[in-house]
Length: 121
Image (cartoon, rainbow, N blue to C red; front, side, top):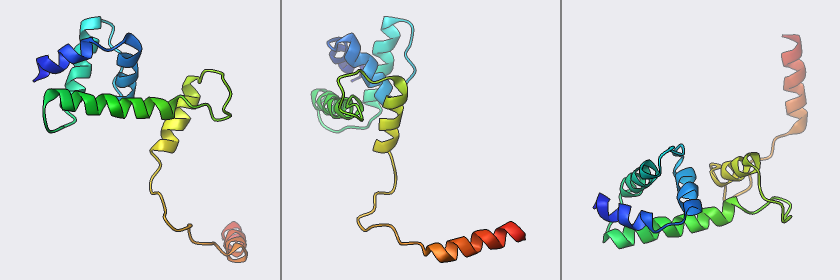
């Protein structure tokens, strides 16, 4: 199974390989062979069901969605994103929990009273 995934990974462009390693949080290896091995192992360890082609297709589809989210500049400018902006977008994507209702309101007078009380005690 791993060898079949390696064969499919070899067909990816270098940019896609680098992006998928980034998506899985894997540090970029120095050797090209190690890149293929680590990426194939990461895809295999995702625990997909079905054929190898289906597992790879699902991983590639997820990467395409991830890549689309990660490469949208916050200001919608055509400027390429730097690493900090990609990290910020990743943090926004991973924020938990997502509320279906708005968070509860905090009474500001009570909050101010507690701050004053904490300042003196």
